[in-house]
Length: 519
Ligand code: D5M
Ligand code: FE
Ligand code: ZN
Image (tube, rainbow, N blue to C red; front, side):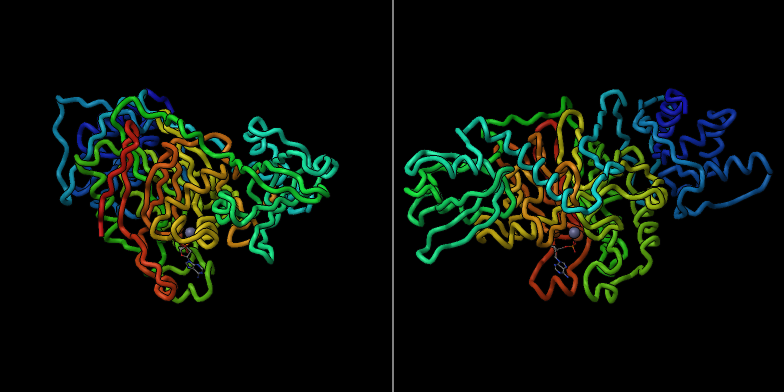
């Protein structure tokens, strides 16, 4: 599609108070006389329409060609067979004050995002969709852990005078030694000390943390399969080492996050759970309406961190709480809800454990069929996890299944459902979104460990636990969005009181957070 023509059309629509579906713009641009086509569409659309959709364009152009009449266009049906086109131009908006001001309809006015498209930027990194190489063989598990150890180990090797496990076994008793490895085992001894077995490419070596040492406090933060370094003194027989120091890959304390050069905001949400009887449609609609108001005019991006739909067969007896039982219908309904979001907001989404993709992480973005169902708003669909950089601010998006594990393993004051961001701090410290393999978190063996945080993100965004919480860890903003699902029977039975119907909004120029409540 000619970008300039599309940009001019979007600009014209916006100046008249309309948002437009990307597909609608694509079709208008393809018309013989796009300008005239636009006039016809605007004459024809019902008064209460705020978003010009592909169907509106279709209907107006059909009237023109065949002389057929029509009175209304259902706002609900999804885009038809024309392939969606990604142009990146939807954001092109300049205000032309010579035309009439935005329409008021349904109690909400258009937000009129006035952004020059040139200043918006959105880049994706770490999307492994279509890159999966794992076959589930034992050798794949070996490669993924080796890659984890190599890459996280590289962050530690300059900090200690490390030796391979096999070399440490050969050192004389009483020597100072250090090792970089994966936590293979954590055990308490009969006398109350802690025995931590580290593994590297050559073998394993046991490290003993004495119960009266300061590092004992760090032991209860350890997770299986995380990468760290230990330094200490070998016992007389060199069969074990007494730990003096522990080092974590971590985020430097002095980390300085990047910020946007202008006042622009992103809504960071997750866990919509469309299809569940507990999906809070009214709250969602209130949120979508708010996005059309002046107050939300700086919200130009929306990030969705998984669990778009409730899914089918995710947990035992889940079907008793389903409102929509067909998974495709759930996505079609989700797509309708997404269409209420202003067309000039850029959307990026990753899947979660309720979504129809493989459960093992990393989870590739949705397949073609589901993308087609969700194409109307033209969201960018990427893997869980992925990093999206918005105007220089990198946001690591991860659904958050490992948080259940972190919360279960760590003491209450270090990680809890009430303070989900504190659990996220531990993932940042370990520089891995899901260190512990084998519990709730299923790991897909790949050649590369996509779950490693190679770079420090400016913002770390998760969901899954349905609790809202945010805070800073070494200047990185950790934010767990709440959900759009009221308490389920299961959650009632285990006393989880979800934070439902909230939208945390992040200022990308300051990394400040404000929370909008819609329930
Ligand atoms: O997860 C929402 C939260 O509730 C998350 O912390 C897991 C937990 N949860 C919910 N249902 C179950 C069942 N049936 N078993 C174990 N844990 C559960 P979500 O991914 O949205 O379901
Ligand atoms: Fe969820
Ligand atoms: Zn989830």
